[in-house]
Structures are given as structure tokens and as C-alpha cells.
Length: 156
Image (cartoon, rainbow, N blue to C red; front, side, top):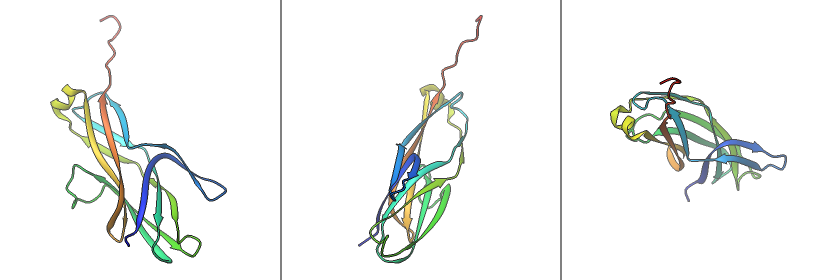
């Protein structure tokens, strides 16, 4: 039976004293208002995610979390890779869970005149959870860049 699991992108992951986790602000898309859609230079702050896996056996469990640009072919290197390792024992054989922080990353895109005319540009990313190089699950992350309204200057 293949390993099964979940990855959820959220604002915060809070551990509780009872061994549970509280997820605050889950999402799959972010809207970013920019002045000019023809040239976007944006730095995304750290992303938080919650990982939950049903292990197959006791011993070391090696997982990988990747951030991948879905506009790129699958053989292209991911933008971010995080390696996780847990020691699974009799207490955690039924369920392993943990918070993960994806470090900040930059996005530089030339949207062109079409994006500027439409007023929006959407980029698609995926946060993936892998075990032994095999994809377990993924969560979409869509970045929607929207042209900020330009306020007229006083006196014009």
C-alpha cells in the first residue's frame, strides 16, 4: 500500500499541549496588487504548511516538500526543496504530523502588454509532498497579480 498523506498551506500552524495542531487561515490562492503587470518583481514571505502522513513502518521516514512552478516542465528543478526526516516508533506509526515553513522566495515575471490590458496575471505553483521521490500529494498555490488602481494626482 502506498504512503498516504496531506499537505495544507496556511497562515499558521499551532501545536497544542494535547499533541494536536491548529491550522489558521488555510488557502490555495493569494492576491497581490502591483503597480505594473508588465514587469513583476515580488518577494513572497515564508509560507507555512501542515504535513500529515500515515507511515508504513517504524524507523526513519524521509519526506520532501517542494515548491514547483507549474508553468515549467516537470523535469525542471523545483524552486524550493525541504528535506524532512522523522523517527517513526510504535506511538507514531498510525500518524506523523508536523509544521513546515517554506522560506521566502522571489518571483520575477514579464507579463507583457496583454497582462497589463487585462488587469491581472495568474501564476500557478504547487506545494508537493514526496516520499522516496514519489509524489504523495500536492496543494495548489495560485498567485493572482492584480493591477493596483492608480489614484489621480490632486489638481489634475
